[in-house]
Structure formats: C-alpha cells, structure tokens
Image (cartoon, rainbow, N blue to C red; front, side, top):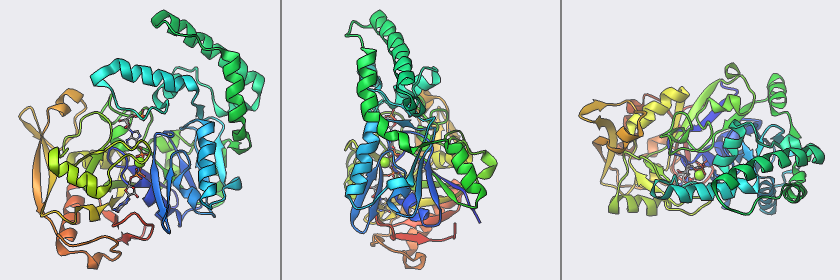
Amino acid sequence: MWNNVVIVGAQWGDEGKGKVVDALAARFDIVARYQGGANAGHTVVVDGTKFILQLLPAGIVRPDKTAVIGNGLVVNPESLFEEVERVEKAGVPIGKRLVVSDRAHLILPYHRSHEVAAEQARGVGKIGTTAKGIGPCYEDKAGRRGLRTGDLRNFEVFRRKCGEVVAEKNRLASAIFAGTPLEADGLAERYYEKARCILPYLADVSAYLNREMDRGKRVLFEGAQGTMLDLDHGTYPFVTSSSAAAGGACTGTGVGPTRIDAVVGVSKAYATRVGSGPFPTEALGVEGEKIRERGGEYGAVTGRPRRCGWFDVPAARYSARLNDLKALVITKLDILDHLAEIPVGVEYDLDGRTTTEFPSEIELLEGVKVRYHVMPGWQQPTYGVKDYAQLPKKAQEYLRFLADQAGVEIAVVSTGPQRDQMIWMKEL
Ligand code: GDP
Ligand code: IMO
Ligand code: MG
C-alpha cells in the first residue's frame, strides 16, 4: 500500500490535478503543496460548488484534512487570506487546518511590477506568465536576497531585510531604468500590516510532516503546473520558475525521497498549454477551437484561452521517466466523445531523425514534425461514467493505446468535473 504519494501534472499544467487530489484526499490525512504559488488554479467541484484554489492545497475542501504550504512555494499573504476568506464563505471552515512553512518565500509588490516590465521588454518573445510575481520572487530566492514568511515574526528584522533588498533593487533600477525609487520603510510597514495574519500558521513544515508520518499519517503531495513547465526539465525558457516535477516534492517540503512511496501522473486524454512556447501536438484552427469550447479550456484564474491539441506520446514517456510514474490518471475523456477520429502524436521527426525522446533544445522543438496515429472515436457519451465496463469499446481501446504508448498503467479515468465522476481501475 502507498502511504505517501505525489500527484504531479504530466503535461503543461491544468490536467485536472485539483479534481484528482480532492478525490484521492479521502484516503490521506494531510495534503501538502510543494512548489509554485498563486499562478496555479486548481478546480474542485463538490456538490455543485466550484472552488478555484491557487495557494491553498486542494485537500482544504475536505473538513477533516490538514493542508500544508511547503517551503517550496512563493506566498503573497494578502492573496492567501483572500483565498481563505473565499473558501470559508463557501461554507468550508479552515481554522487550524492550515500549516504554512516559515521558510516559504514572500512575494512583494515589486516582484509583480518587475515581472510586467520584463514581459513587456521581451515583446513577441514573452513567456506569457500569469503576472503573479512568481519568476522574480524565485529569482530573489536563488539570488539569496529573498524575504521569507519567518522574517515576519519580528517586524524590526523584516524592516531591516526589506531595507537591504530595496536599496539593492533601487541601485540596479536606477542604473538600468529611470523610475521612482522604492521607499523601504513605508513598503515594510504597509506589507507587514497585511502580511502578519500569516504568523499563527507558520511552522517548520519538514519537522511537522516527518513527525506526522512517524505517527502513521498519510501525506498526499500536490504538484502545481506540470512536468513540461518544470524549471529544469520543461520546455525552457517557456517554463515556470519552480520544480514542478515530482523531485520538487522533497526539496519543497523537507521530506526525504525514500519516505515517498509512489508518484502518480495526471494527464488529459488530449493536451493543452497556456502561454507561449513549444507545443508539438497543437491543433490549430477549427479542431483546436472545438476542443477548447467543449473542454471549457480557459484559464481557471486568468481566463486566457488555452491552446489545445492531441495526446503527446514522447512528452508522456518523458514525464513518466522523469517522475518515475507508477500510475496515470487520465482526465476529461468525455471531452473527446464527439470525435469520429482522434489523432495521437506518437513520434517526433527532428531534422529528418525519428524519435520518441523529448529533446532539450527549444530550437529543435519549435521545428518538430509529429507523426500521428489516428484512433477511431467512440461517438457516444462517456460523461459521468463510473464503471470501466460501461465505456464504449473504442474508448477502452483508446485508453489502452495511451497506456501502452506511455508505458504507464492507467489507474483512474475521470469522466466529468465532479468528485465522483471517476472510474477506478486500480486501488491506489
Ligand atoms: P488543474 O490546474 O490541474 O487543477 O486543472 P484546472 O482546474 O486548471 O483545469 C481542469 C478543468 O477541467 C477544471 O475546470 C475541472 O473542473 C475540469 N475537469 C477536471 N476533470 C474533468 C473531467 O474528467 N471531465 C470534464 N468535463 N471536466 C473535468
Ligand atoms: P496549474 O497548477 C498552466 C504557465 C504560464 C506561463 C508559464 C510561466 O493550474 O496547472 P508563471 O506565472 O508561472 O511565471 O508563468 O507557466 N503556467 C501555467 N500553465 N497551469 C498552471 O498552473 C500554470 N502556472 C503557470 O501560463 O506560460
Ligand atoms: Mg489550473
């Protein structure tokens, strides 16, 4: 039996991780997010109420679970508490069920403004970020000048550190751009006033999780974004700035790798990507638009239309290897119900060379040609089906093909946004 499991996006994010984490959370005690920030939008639908979670782990909607925000996240306390308020207003009390790492980095107002300026300066080469200050905050973390949640424990310490960072930022900014300098004391005071409500939630998350695991509690680690957006392994530089792949679960919570029993990947039955960057199996034109409309493929937070396309076998195999996936959850099968034929991208042609490997060079990926295997569609409704035997034969064949090609067993199939619209093929 798996006690501690990582749920990771196997594609470019928005695979349905929120729904899957919520469904699986029933069998766990603690749900811990390990990276990212409010760039995430994880949708959970419970009895017709829709929650879009950005910083709070999806486990928060189950009143008997503890939700943990790991050190690997970047947190804007003001938006965290707006989210807490939204969830509580929807009838889910949070109280003491939230634990926030005292080592998580803080997003400050200048992170957002610097991100907007950097994106503008990139022009057509822009990444298409979520404009939440994620990248600049992680830059400061790696640059060893970040402020952390624990720094809020002592206002004088916070103000001093803030002063040092702001002085450095102003020196740089005045050398590069002519702009109004930041004023550190005012910024520290305003920020502290809004941010201090996080203090009662702070803890050493590594100590907390390891202690709870020692007591036999089960932890579900919730990834945000997806493997193909991982800072190291994704389609760099069109990635997010954190370790979204499963390895991030260890560094992002302070839990050793051998304490985790398995990694489960979540993938749509097709593919989507939001923002710029290579997307080999993208379906342009009417085909892509049809999937977008049927699948409601618009950003959960930003509302941006998602680019849509077909299941990508080389990307799935890559993700399976990187994360050592022990099982796959395939979501949104129902969105393909209307199609007479469903292409699956099985191989890449890179400069005349055929491969199922995922290349590292962005220049190669941008020119990739995909060889498709076209599967017959089932053209029958699968929405809400809960029993594998009730799926049309051709839908079963499609799933089998994906599993064979990706080299990973499919454990669960999702057939709708609701918690119970799932087919459990294997006990996890
Ligand atoms: P996440 O970021 O990985 O949690 O995914 P998002 O919440 O951003 O996007 C997934 C969307 O698909 C949400 O609107 C979900 O409610 C919805 N969804 C998830 N699974 C299914 C499914 O099996 N069928 C349908 N029709 N919708 C689903
Ligand atoms: P969830 O957790 C899909 C994308 C952005 C952009 C790139 C960098 O809901 O799956 P960032 O703001 O992180 O610096 O943007 O990453 N991106 C996501 N795409 N799902 C997400 O989260 C994403 N979070 C960031 O669109 O291309
Ligand atoms: Mg999302």
